[in-house]
Image 1 (cartoon, rainbow, N blue to C red):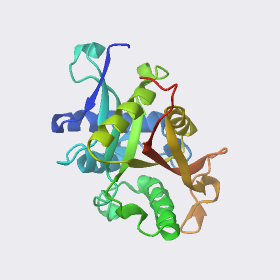
Image 2: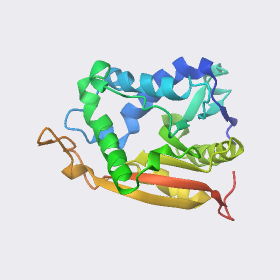
Image 3: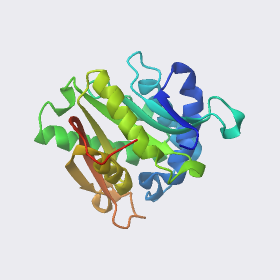
Image 4: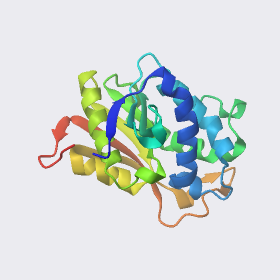
Length: 232
């Protein structure tokens, strides 16, 4: 469909993805759009560089891209991505004050918070060797609403099962991604939710452009199989 092919990423994709993911995040990521001070593309890139390094450039890379070989006449025309890593692998961020633009601190902090709260409730949650973490996923503007995210989630699941992984975890404020996953896989569970309107850093609310956005930590258990009517 639409000349789209799906494949695992290779190290040569890293630079393309650093630019592409930063731009998609800037335009479509709910977390960025709800901040009081919205980060620039350049600010977002300070964090995306770390994510790409921790996923695409890892020897055990688990990431998936959608490629349209006719788009802009470029064989590396990536139009969608899911950047993933083993959940028990080292946190790509560490001390973010050493590398990240300060306008990105709230996004990294709120994601850390929901992971910490999950670990407190379920000790050892992040140490399971059969689980991966979707760090970030997206599709470029021109290719939205073509089923590419759905197909990438299916391909990612098949690839991860072949590699010996049974589950993946992702944090999202995008209700649509969770719905897409639920339509195709039986084992989709919300483990933790966090109200962005109430989230504070240093005593101040930082997500002040929020409507009803709730950050959710979702577990997708691939071992429970795909829904009967799901198809690629």
